[in-house]
Image 1: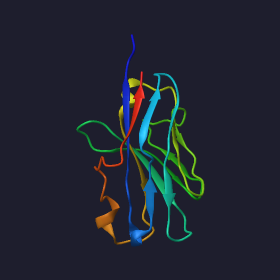
Image 2: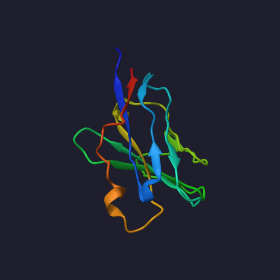
Image 3: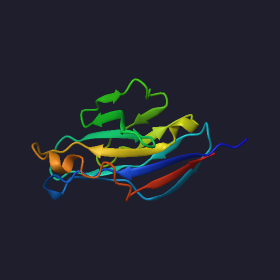
Length: 142
């Protein structure tokens, strides 16, 4: 019996000074249950400061759930329910792709990449597009 898993990716845009942002490419991704999928996320920051990138998972009719954080200091923090043996990311100068291994049907969700702003006090743009589906990518797992 084939099982289908749908993973939708959407980008969170943090527009501090109108220059800092994350981007997730559009398109469909297909994989089979048990396989590995890599979800792309590139980022741009206006000043050559330390980058703090986050990945979140949002299931239908639920709030986003924190998966992990990576930063320029090579800090690696995963939420307890998202162990590194299945959910991992490595940050480099302009990207922080999320690798999900041993795919399960329960991995079906919207995945967000988010950039912590480098400017403080601007809470209006921090979560501006949190629930936006305009930049969605559909990942089909069977």
